[in-house]
Length: 351
Ligand SMILES: [Zn+2]
Ligand SMILES: [Zn+2]
Image 1 (cartoon, rainbow, N blue to C red):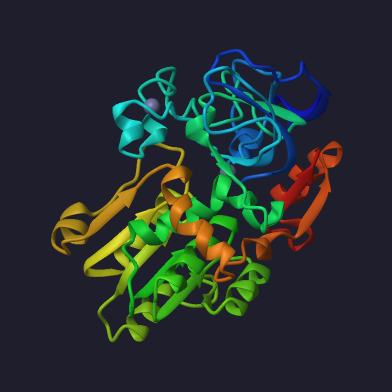
Image 2 (cartoon, helix red, strand yellow; image 1 turned 45 degrees about the vertical axis):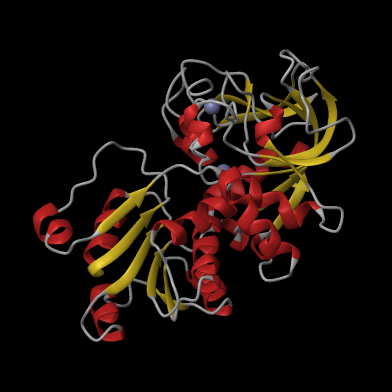
């Protein structure tokens, strides 16, 4: 089958790889109909060369069940399903707590080794994928919804919404969201759905800021306006009630902390890859009684909240799609997405 295969940084190729197949009785094989390129795929595009290669990239995909192992109970051949980017076993103590990222079984081989798109768990920028523990990691797609309406439930929609959840956004809040990319967009929409009075959308890309304004946010480019001063103005000098970091930069985590008021909440859903975030802890966290919550996404946890919002037309995730192309042109998709070319926001691929 065809897949976008990792050979090294900036060296992804569309190659033929062995077909996905059932290996364990709890596996399913999904024939993929839509898949997407995620900002976190770019970490591998840019990063240091990995000690291994030749695996399929991608963790945002959906399709049709082609085969199931003998112990799969909830799904059968022919079911339309979407796949959680985070693969849990569904039965350990962490999975029972909806912390699939920390699954005692599937994450035992290293931090985030249970996210699709690595040598242990080949990804879904491919014609097919093996999904371990299918009962815990697949969601049936309701027949009234099309693929693009639900594709982002695999990762970035729950990730962005989790930012609003971690920041405890509620009615009347003034919220600052750092980032107007795909994840930031869903943090903004999540904050608006939860009743925020004002969502200040921060980015350096004016095209993305214009889109944020269209969805009801106040756009702010910190290269042209003083962010701290503007937030003080808009909150009577108090600071924001909530802030969400949806970019993945240590200095923005610090900025989010600094612009949040006493007793406020900060949610961090951007993937900060380094280990160090420096904060003036006494002055900015302890003295302000601040809550900071960060984490990797567990899509399964948010599916019951988000699917009905899509079904009832309150949330249209397709608004972020700017590019659609065949999987065979996926490398060009990476190049466009990486360069922010052609006003790109999200690239969807069709195998
Ligand atoms: Zn992703
Ligand atoms: Zn588990």
